[in-house]
Image 1: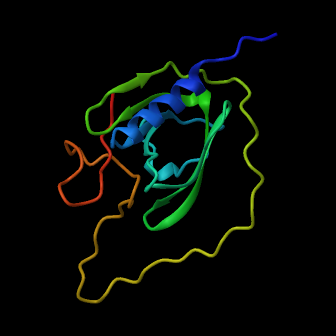
Image 2 (image 1 turned 180 degrees about the vertical axis):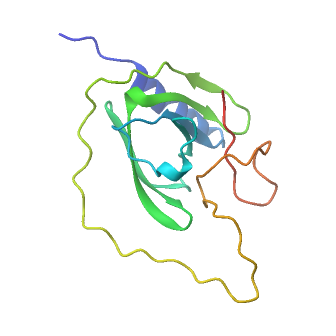
Length: 160
């Protein structure tokens, strides 16, 4: 019988610890052809995602994959991450968590069957509003900040 990996169990345990402690759990992921993430937010083949309850919908952490929906630039996107591609899970507020070596090239679980695409909705800026750079509501590119701003939504901090 093949050895069962402890990695998915550790991911779920750190996620639970973060949420029980009031911290925001983040995932650092190595992106390859097996991952389904918004490629416009990938930097140097990696992406950091906020996987808190408020930032995701339908989060499912199985032994082979992590699946959920998240909003990027106001548009809900389906996310699929093989557990082998996870590099770290940590609390955004204090950086505590666990890092892993990504094991790329192994056969992950198949991606979920594609549902018919939902109509894309976007807001139209008011004429008096100046155009702002595209930015995700819950997940998105690193802005170089030192953490979440007081009174606002959390921002991503990339770890190395």
